[in-house]
Length: 354
Image 1 (cartoon, rainbow, N blue to C red):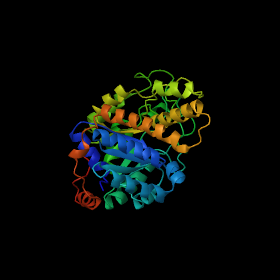
Image 2: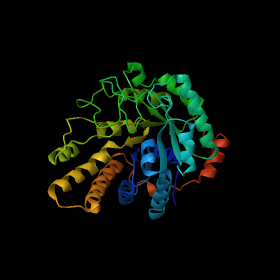
Image 3: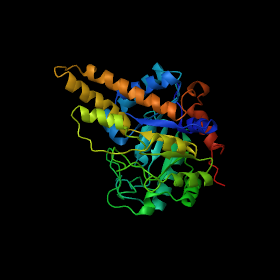
Image 4: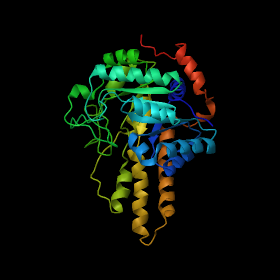
């Protein structure tokens, strides 16, 4: 079984100059699609589950499913990550159920809607990092609030997202504050705000520097060259997937996501983890709609799910190849969490902020 912590995986990614897509899942079919793609190209994997996914699938079901995926694909290093934890309990119960990594999103208060103060974010993230590191699990923090630079608003995803208008400064992570945050919290990875957002409707036009601030990533990387940066809300919302959905009865208005080439540019500037959910949903939904339209008498769920899995597998494989993840799974020797805990304890994994 090749369960790996986020820290070890992103350390390897940094040493070898690649990024790792982090795919959200809710069910078995999505997990199998991701792992099949990874097997095809020898890529390590980050699978993540939101609080909404945990409520939908049940923690025990998710835990057993991850155990099964790790057993079926023993040569693929697999990190199981809690996405957007809203408090200590969410993060600690995830670890208890086998997650090797958690995100403590202290950019919002515990209701996952109200923007939090910097002091609150530092305090709760540091507490989670301290507890998680005690058992060898990794921690991702977030500084800045995820939301659109066009509208000044966040987009809720599984009940997580800022409500109301946000100040422009809240939507962009401050590089100097990022240094202080990493030093005080001891996080293993830092999610930054640069204009990306959850969901399909990220941008009303192909994004440029005014609404997708890649310059923020560059500035933070210069000040924190050894910190693993994370891009949230980074589905590309491919036009071909929009077209398939709409061809077979959908009504998605024209929208734009984060271009793959911009993500690749971000990887060159220290981005090591790239969160992708909407693209996977769209890939599967397009096939559901196509089969329902073309085969109106079909009622076997497998006839819908297998083509949907294939479509998601192909999308995941494309991202593994584009981000440089392909070819690295077999190069990683997984370190047990107990050994990672010892490294945290002796200070060898402390972040470099000077």
